[in-house]
Amino acid sequence: MRFARAIVIVFDGLGAGEMPDAEKYGDAGSHTLDNLSRAVGGLKVPNLSSLGLGHIAGVDAIEKAAAPIGSFGRLSEASPGKDTATGHWEMAGIVLEKPFPVFPEGFPPEVMERFTRETGWGWLWGKTASGTEIIERLGEEHLKTRKLIVYTSADSVFQIAAHDGIIPLQELYRVCEKTRRLADSYNIGRVIARPFTGKPGSFQRVAARKDYAAPPPGRTVLEDVKAAGLDVIGVGKIGDIFVHRGITEEVHTSGDAEGINKTLEAMDRCSGGLIFTNLVDLDTLYGHRNDAPGYANALASIDTRIPEVIGRLKERDILFITGDHGCDPTTPSTDHSREHVPILVYGKGIRPGVNLGTRKSFSDLGATISHALGIQIPANGKSFLDLICK
Image (tube, rainbow, N blue to C red; front, side, top):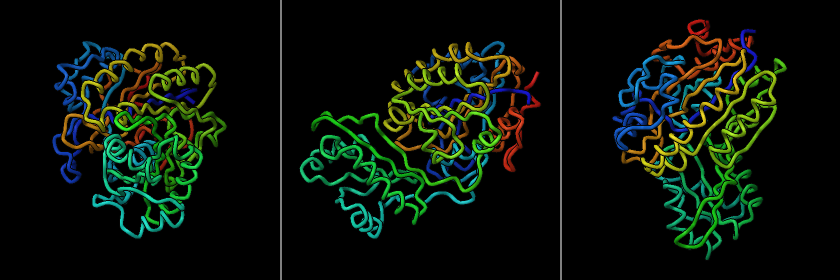
């Protein structure tokens, strides 16, 4: 075992340039990092830059450190799709052959008929929408009719929004659990509870969102790490994404600041294994809302916390920073974008300045984690550990 702990921090929605097949997904020209940097007159991310962010292939608008202290590259997504579950599963060694179904014309009538029949609730909309926009548009009608707001996006999601003063949170969760069973019949990737509060004109989502994902179609690196008797601490929505498999401790968070705090706390108590963190705000609060200044400020805020994470690293730790898909806030689309994602690697046992180039699959990350922790490398993915170890 070369390393005792692997710390993986996923910046949800951080893309590093369009994939070769981006046009098929309607994402030609997407480049979350570069387009964002140009839109705001330059990103202020000195700590990520010092790790090598600006040296990644295809990244042109980020400051290049004179001597990067980390290794750097970008990962290609081998699976079809551009959603959260697909991206995270591939990081953990699962490469999908078929994408999850999407519903650009809205859910078919038979799906919504089953929804009412099996949950006992009426519904509004049932088509694609921006979550914040549809809550503002239909929130008042929801308050009057008590019908749930149902919507989807370019991803394979069945989202259910309800005001917490009308539908108790536990009832919303119960509805989502029943809908998950319905969604299994259609292989829908995720059912998401979207509680909100407030009054017409000032509705706001609350932090009690909950994801009900389809299970990964195979064994993941997380399960292998757990089976080896090591800790697997999921911070943020990691537990939901992996349907609570292969995780020894789940730590839910209300935002990225808390996500970093909880990651640091996990580093203080975890003696060996994997700490896997998802920071969702870049995607949910800014990418999907096409809020480039907000995205840039949030990314800059996370960047200021990187020294704290590095300062907690021990001799036998390895840190990975990556993304799960793009979510370019500068394009007309409000959905995810089919992009490469950055990979930055740092540790006291890691060589600085190694250019990993463009890797063929997100699963190279899972293979490298397994290699680092001394467990069996999964069938998918190629470890790059030997390239970066001192």
